Length: 220
Image (cartoon, rainbow, N blue to C red; front, side, top):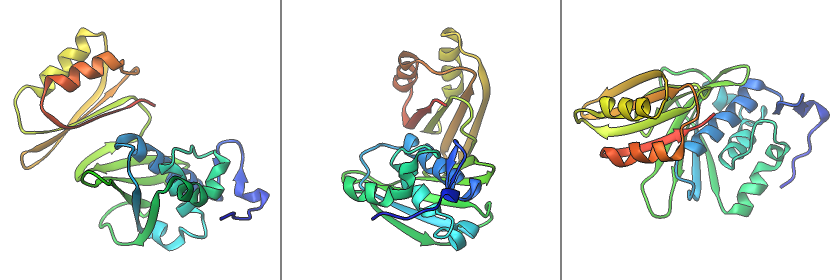
């Protein structure tokens, strides 16, 4: 499917679409979400909240979200035909208007479905000017603005995880910008922002050192 657009649908060199919040921000949420999950998903469901739900067709939010999960940046002109690209890759996509509760009006929950494993979900908000914040991963509340190299680790309650991670980073010359834990019952999400990109060998040491249920590094 090809969508006809005017020159006003391409604004400057940094984004495609008529709205920084509804297109560029939406694309960035979806692109960031793609980097946080395993890649072999074959279906994506977008739960649209607030103004995203009301205007997603007119503002191109739908095309931007699909483009994002395909790995397109906000300035990628392929966003205009993202549905066609998704169809070629065999990725199903569905948009559901819903109420996600007391969240920013430009919020989407993205559920990635897999042929051989449980679903993964990422929720984020477009907060203006193309800026975003990821607020939830797989039911774990977080606050990630995608502007620093960040390590996400989820685990069942156990002693010594923070000391272990901090020690590995210190021993390898890393400075921790911020470190935050979010606890829900016996489940913990540890979010660690760094001042510089994390080397693969250091990530592997962290991955193998504790019993993590989820670990993902996002370099920005």
